[in-house]
Image 1 (tube, rainbow, N blue to C red):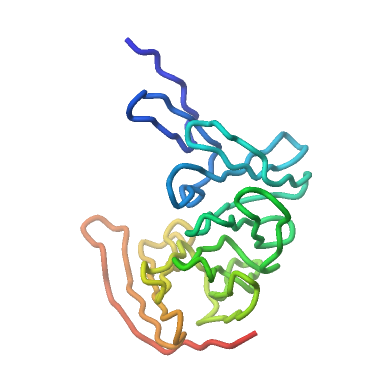
Image 2: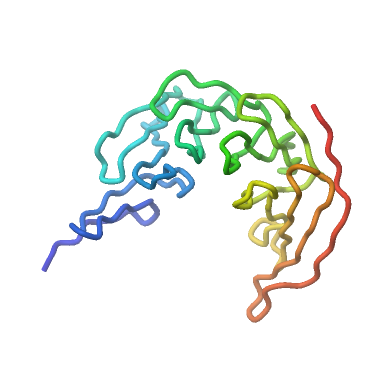
Length: 223
């Protein structure tokens, strides 16, 4: 019988279906995968010394440090651009971008949470204008730092993602695990017009998946 390799209770695991070899990575999320699915960006912590942003092949080879942040600084939520050229991440300076092969990072926004890349790799969306309560505004900004727009009402924002055509953004609010409620809402916004919002109530109760929907007018302002 083949010996089983111990797997941490919470981790990302890469399994080679041909050899059955597996490689484990620290707790992150799968948005750190490169667009070709061959590499992964992730964050590790060395005790109370530093955080490291690393990139590795899925088999664990070519594992290299892209950036170090001495403690108590931090690094989190790496997001690989769809064209494979850059990685967005959160760090001491806010939302930043770094070349996928390593290099000097640059700050995109100092008031952002984890970002989502548009399919064209030219724009990012993220919860911005953060407040201690967790509420934020939906922000869309060009990859080069220009063209920042703030959309819609202030609210907690979770699970942000782009539609495949890059024309709409979807995100959830009033998450049950945060608000201790059995319902939440999914919102959609036209990323170009930034005016018409659509929201749908969803529920985690058994046998109930959707509820009421509504459409209202949102606002945007250039900054």
